[in-house]
Image 1 (tube, rainbow, N blue to C red):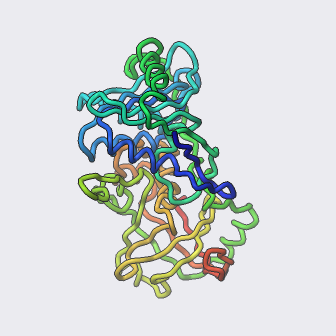
Image 2: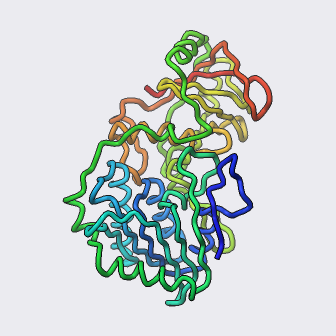
Image 3: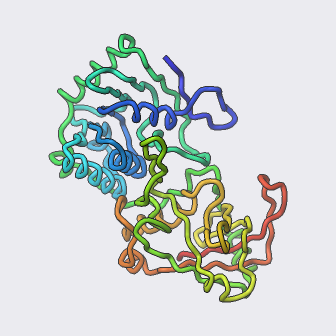
Length: 357
């Protein structure tokens, strides 16, 4: 038995985290059963790509609260995407608890019908997605059970749950309330701060004449669509890229359109909708425009707004048609006259204004 924890400061422990341990059990198994109360859209898409990119595995997934509390559209679309994939490949399907509100969090893993491991604790499916930054969500604690005898009750319970208290996704969906997408992707991040109206106003007033228009490219497997790119392969196993991971490729023609592009620099961006976070330009000719530390920060800001507008369906590529529906196919990137202290570099960084309105 092993304790695993979220490890958010200040309670950073010596215990491993769910994402790391989940990946180990995923690698070691060929059949997975998961029953959780909730699943975020990016976790559903992460699991789908993990299954899609690696040796085939079976998966049965129960969403315990969907019938009773509904799903937002991005969750609904991601669940439909995963369920369609599971059914098409014969790998399993998604189920909905329909007899009662199931708020438990249980996962079991097996290989050749032999027990591999199980999780029991407080983590919903969102905890399986690797996170480089700190997300302001709940602090979770779980037990990893690696002994078949001590986990026998857990295995029996999840089997009984699937046998007695669930219905298939397809039969349940007409009864699920689907809510509009909230634009909350940035609110849950420790590496993103909100600006007051006066702070945002001051940023806008300090914009200089150094302005770049960065086209949003829709290549199939890069830029806004990194999720669909080839994952990082090691020893026959592919670790996939998260749904919200984004890295913009900025051409030299854009960088040279006016003088003053931040070549190989770290800088702060204030956004038109009132957020602030740190970005960098990296790579040859400073072509890579990305958020510092975790590429999903910038991606959450861009793709989250596309989803909130109803332009982007979770799990589908960003295309020219998606951007046309949103009404914008570029970012306006403007230098300001401000600098601001950055604790990580222990110095002042330039502030730039990033507009996707």
